[in-house]
Image 1 (cartoon, rainbow, N blue to C red):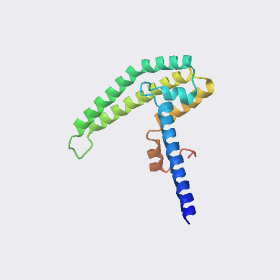
Image 2 (image 1 turned 90 degrees about the vertical axis):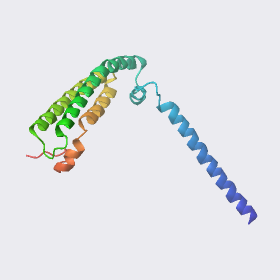
Image 3 (image 1 turned 180 degrees about the vertical axis):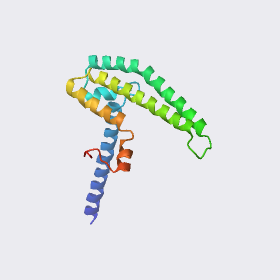
Image 4 (image 1 turned 120 degrees about the vertical axis):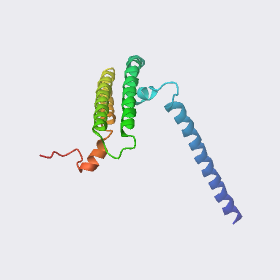
Length: 163
């Protein structure tokens, strides 16, 4: 019985050591390989297997687009503040509030159009297959913001055609 207990405890200790070592190694590897706090585009290079030349051009496009993106976000935020002021403590949606909602929607549509154009430009700097995959994912993310809610509320899955 002493021998069986010793074998069981040894196996248990070995299992804990293997699990702990595996966890530690995988955690360190993930931190080292998958994150680079100084480069917000490192995921792009890894995910789409881009060369240094491709990344340099994409980085230039990204840096050129950031001010336009920030400007659009600031405009939307300002309109949202205007809407909040108009709504105040009202229990009804006024004509003025409806107008602000339309202005916000128009700005968001402009923002989406600019983003899609930027993503299309970026995709053209990639190898064709990778560019298509990137553009498809960016379209899904850009256009899919409200899609799930719209589909669930309408009972429409988006796959069938209704006439």
